[in-house]
Length: 420
Image 1 (cartoon, rainbow, N blue to C red):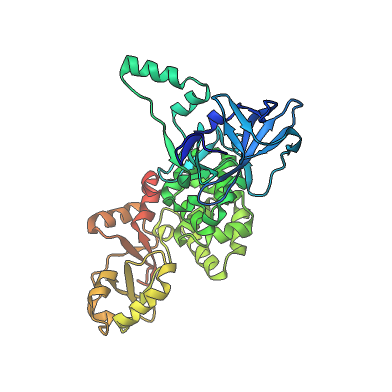
Image 2: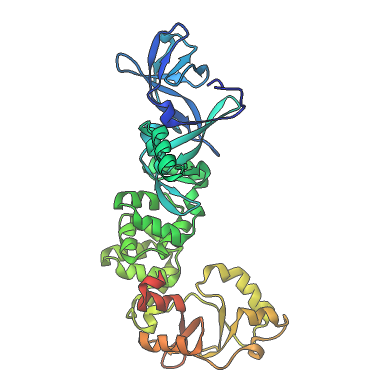
């Protein structure tokens, strides 16, 4: 598309392109622009051409190059009418008016759902790039051709200018269908949003679109997001997956979160997922499922680190570096004897400050604050409030270490709106 003035770069809106009449150099009418075909590449989609509605109703493809503007309503194309062919979409290519206008997208920078009211293109280097989406009221006004009128009224009556609300394409994630979501599969922008914000976005979507978005996430992002999502939504999302797909995601969740989710699922669905999970993880989950949800055994996680008192700081740190990524609770490590009786606790800060050859028995805190497997939520909450700890170990009647409760796990029981 030839430059419309002497400036090297020109911005154009889709609303200004659509419905424009196209003629050839002899003035013969070729058709009216009804859509724009673009190839979805990074960082910005590139316009390949325009879709013309011809006199007989066909959709003809007009290449982007060789088109120039002669006035506000008419474009001229340097191509004979008999050279125009019917449009046939290519892989990775979309018709922008049909696929994007009035559709919901995620603003990954602002972490919220927006509606596309217009599209802005940059004409540069003899190409036309999709660079912004307009999500503001001005985009709607522009589409109905009332921009000048509304601007004049607002300026005259209120001394106010209605501004464009543009979002860079780099921060836009499409939501219209699984195919659109996967256009950016190599660099899915949803994975760049904090899981808590992504959970809010999922909860705001209708059930079909929510499922499509969730299933387009990689399993690590899906697991992190699921942990932040309302339990009813969790159940809905996992129910829509087969057992193998669900197990892959649930295995990436913290052990306590995975257990809570499986406890909420229909029994047959939960059993099917457990059969697909790795044996050791499944066994840990089954152990936690055996305890009532509002007792310590039901709130705890068994994914933590414990050491013998003769282990050195260097040995403990080496273990943490290897296994730390896979445990739910890392700030505290517990010291136990051969029978797993709880002897003390060492914080990560203690380990960092101690010399490498110091044994853990010398730096562990023997003033143990713990709860019993059968203690209720009120007792556990009182312990957190009284002692100001971030986690509380759980022991059985013989003082053997069984698990640990993190403060977040308590919140999810006594104040679900804060725990998620």
